[in-house]
Image (cartoon, rainbow, N blue to C red; front, side, top):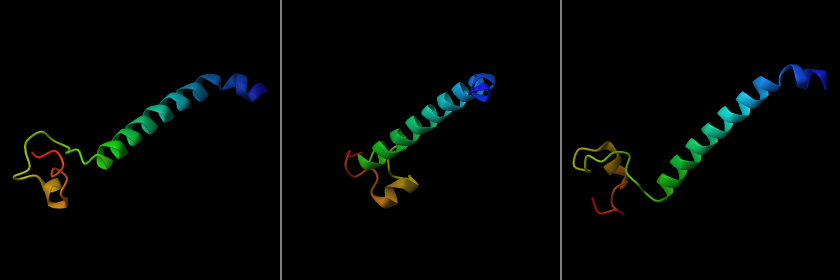
Length: 59
């Protein structure tokens, strides 16, 4: 219990960082599932267009 009290600040910071990383990862996975492109420049010269990233949105 004393260890928790001594390190509660670090524990809270680690939990916040973990939540941010998890949120970013879930956002990327959600975008990939919905086949959203990574840029807004169009698909003519986009390397992602080779794997049909942009086909669903019609851009």
